[in-house]
Image 1 (cartoon, each protein chain N blue to C red):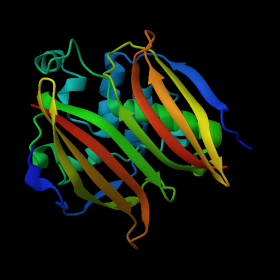
Image 2: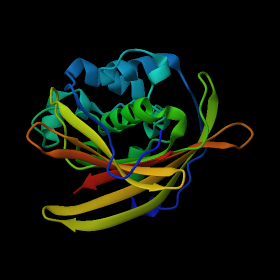
Image 3: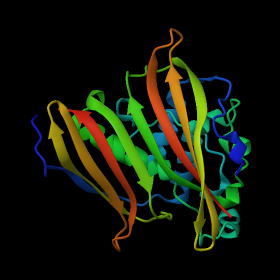
Length: 128
Length: 132
């Protein structure tokens, strides 16, 4: 499928993760950091409650891109986390094509909370 | 942050693409447990923590002061289930900045995943942050 600059690849809302899901994600990534599962630890670290894993947002970006363009066409993904995500917070995730050069397509991705707070920004490249 | 760690290369460690871990990852994402849809970010630096490349410990990052700044993935070849890969982690860059409420350190660590014949299949860069 040919892509053009400005094409919206997807715009979806990912339902917020509860604590059980955070624990599953930590187990699945072998992440021992208690900040994702231990309320008291998270508060001692200066947060109101446990944090959703940044790599969960990365995984959302990658899974949605793979669904849209095909996993075998993904070349790279570069994510910057810009704000913490807490349990049960839905994320609006979107991706827009920013450049098409020959067989290489670049897109910009964002994840944002319902109040508009952007929690992650990313760029990704895939084969046309 | 242990600034002297810049340039350090960890001894290679081995990871295997395990279905059981991928299923947990998918459940954590709230996605259907279909191994065909496991995000290609399944391989992650955290797997090194119990395999000789504990970045937090090596860099001297206290977890209560740690933040995850970002990640970069570069995919070169698909990884098959049960495939074993050799992973080499390199502390590429450590920088210190003055924030509004104290110093902040940033560490970029690159992980190169390769097959037994040396073919690189994946490069991951993780960006770790420590607050003062």
